[in-house]
Each structure stands twice: as structure tokens, then as C-alpha cells.
Length: 407
Image (tube, rainbow, N blue to C red; front, side, top):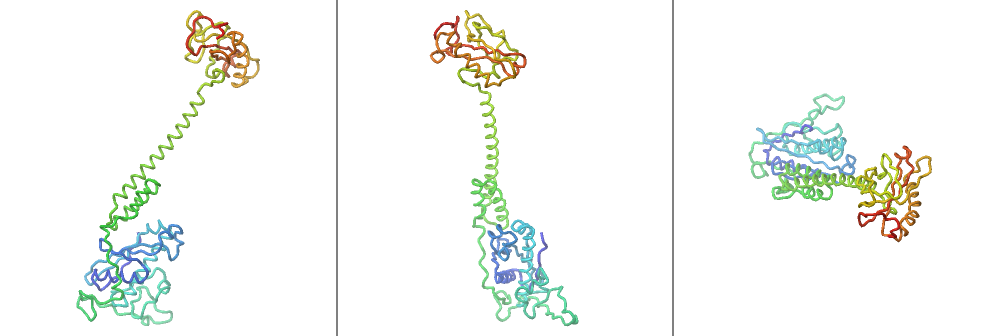
């Protein structure tokens, strides 16, 4: 944080505060007394600064505090500016410019009060050698800056100097204000103190609303509101904290929701891929073909194949209750594995006519269903070329052969 700019006045703290406020108002600043007795000073457009940053020029938003403390021979005025505010709103360049504005304001205030004989010692120096000449020149008799040098070629004694202002003794003079304070220009323009204790901070309300609509914005606005409430003593601390909490919870829920969405999509894709097809009553050959293929014969019966792989343990006598009966058997031409779709097409082409020949009625007119067992890419490499057609009753197990049943 930059060092505060100091100005010493002959007035006690209370009237000195009013005098400083009056001088700042003349410079176009908005001045508000705070609950702690300091002055809250601001100027420029916050909206323009947030958009243009340090390039907002004269409309760049600047905000600083002025603390006035009693001293043995009058009072000490501190112009305090936080570099964090200027950096946040205008970048690194904005922090420098905002600091220059504070130093310039302290300098102009000192010059103005020096006209009234209220300054002890030197007026604060401006931020740059030519900054003091960019505005209104210091009137004759105003104290010169400590580092001011005599014009080139002139003796040091030629530099004009003003006698130090007499200390404030508390004795009333002609035209003095109540309390023995010497008169100073603009004292009647000081705005009345703002009742911060009974005012709700606007940013805290905005933080709570943003917590629901834009969670990240609610968190940021809540932090800003807490800082303002702490400085001004306004109401709204609970609203600011609520905005931070709501924004955090909504952000967390959003993250969890996105994760769950992608998990559900992944599970759905896996389930769809794993689901067996129902094209004409066929099994997916990759799911149902045994790793060690078994050669089946027409007329053989099998019990329920719960594992999806047919082994010799599944063969049962057709006179007993069973689930499947082999009604067709053929081989696929040798060569490279044709792929699962080609196996399915070949099975349907061969099993449809075999079904009508074995059962006695076409598959379209039958109440029975059929599936097939065929080679997969793994069993093809072992020499499996056989496709077996299996008839089954969707109503349950059957006893005896279904050959010629015309069902």
C-alpha cells in the first residue's frame, strides 16, 4: 500500500475535517463522512473504469480515505489510498494513475487551505514536477513545496517563501465560526453525514441475487460487499455471506451435475453396446458364441444357457424339460472372418427356410421364436465355421421335440 500523504493544519480535527472536505468538493470529488470519523472520497465512473480500465482518462474511478487526527498544535490529515483498488479496476497502470490522483488531490487541498492560512509547514508535493502547473496555480503567499528550487540563474534567497501559518490558538476572531475556528471558504457545502448504520449495502443484495443466477459472480460480489461493509459500517454482512455461500453451493452443484451427466452418458453407451440385438430372434454372436466352440446336431436339445455360452453340459434329452432345440445346422464359407453383421445375415438367410421345414409352419406364422449360435472372431481363428439354429418357446420350457409341431 502506498505511503499516506500528510498535511498539517492549524485547526483541531473536527473543523479541519470540514475544511478538507470543502476543498475536495471544490475539486469535483464526492465526499461522505463515515461512521469512524474519516472521509470517504470518490470521483469518476466505476462502470467506465471496469470497461476501459486505466484508459478511462479523467473519468477513471478513484476512491480513497482521508483520516484527520488531533495533534498538539492543530491536526494531521492523512490521504490514504489502497493500491489494490486501482489495480483491480485499471490494472497496474490504473494503480499508478489512481495514486497520482490522490497525491494531486492532497496537493490542491493544501494549496487551497494555505490561502486561508490554515496550513502548517509545506504543502504536499504534486505527483510530477509539472502536475501543479496543470491545474490552478498556487496563489501568492501559499507555502511552496519542500523540494521547490529557485529559478535558474537566480540566487537562492530570491525564491519566494511564505511565513509559516500561525498556530491555531482557539481564540475567536472577527468572522470566526462557533468554537473559535477561523473562517475558511466553502465550509457551508459539506454534505451531512450518511447514516451508514441504518443503510443496507447495495452490493451485498446484488451478491445474493448473483449467487443463484451467476454463482461465480455471487462469490466475487459477496467478497467485495464484505470489504465495503467492514469499512462503512453498513448493514448487509449477512446478505454478503449468503451470496458467497449460495454461489459456492450452486457452483459445486453445477460441477457435480456435469460429472453425473457425463457418467450417465457413458453408462448409457455401455449398456446400449452390451444389449443383445432382437433382429429376427438372433443372439449377438460375440456374446453367445463359446470360446471353445461345440458342434451341434439337428434334433439335439439344450437347457437354459444362463451364461450365454453353450457347452456339452447344456445338452439334455429332448424327453426332458428343455429350452432350446437345434433345427438347422450349416457352415460359413472359409476365408477371413466376415464380421458380425455378415454372420447375422447368413444365419437369417439359412435359419428362416430351415424353420419352416423343421416346424411345419413359416416363422412369420409361428408362435415360437428362434435364435442362433455362430462363430465369433475368436472362435473363427480356432476353425469354427458352424451356425446352429435353435428354436424356443417364449412361453417357457418344452418337453419332447417341436419337429413337425406346426406351432
